[in-house]
Length: 301
Image 1 (spheres, rainbow, N blue to C red):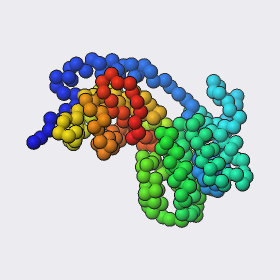
Image 2: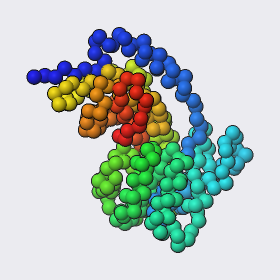
Image 3: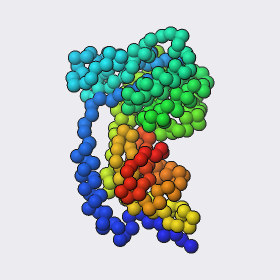
Image 4: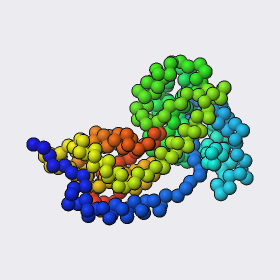
């Protein structure tokens, strides 16, 4: 027998209409213009992080006096690009060379500290050789911190694989970063390095994106009509409405009758539907099923 799952059921739709509108107005008021984007350049030893940093800084490296109203940290570097301040965090550590950098535990601890300060992670991989297990361990930290990310295949002047094979291998090894764009560059020749700057701006825009509540609920309603929520031991599982309550990363609450019964595969389906309709390239999306009136508690994607 067909199940009677609903999203914004007719008897509740009118009740929520004014509420959703007020939420949307409140959300728009909260949004503030932020001109500083914090970027962590991460990767294992000898992938070319320091060379990439120098190529990115180039002639656009900002002096302290130019960065008005910004908390200056002597271990960071800055550029001003298209009227945005891009801060590369803890670059003093990237420049520092030594045997300790090659120690896995140190590399992971240092990466973690960088990510705590960042909005976007540039995961630098060496395209001239096979990817390593440590690459994956470092990449896992991006997912842990729910940051936006860009995968940079450096040393593209001497690639180990073709472009198609490289992208396929990246998508296979780093499935959890499937939303991340992949850019091939050569820090040595500076080829395509400017593409990274453009992508940083775009990915940050996506990471900060807020979906209007009305549009979000239209999409959830459409997705549910196309593919009903599986029942919970024969009982209906319903999403009454959805609202995005945070950005950086984008976090969406699903107000439900049985939040604990929403299967992870259906959450993944909804996330894919959101990605198909809104540009979230480079950004994770977090869905939080909860009961009405329940305090928001983050759940992973």
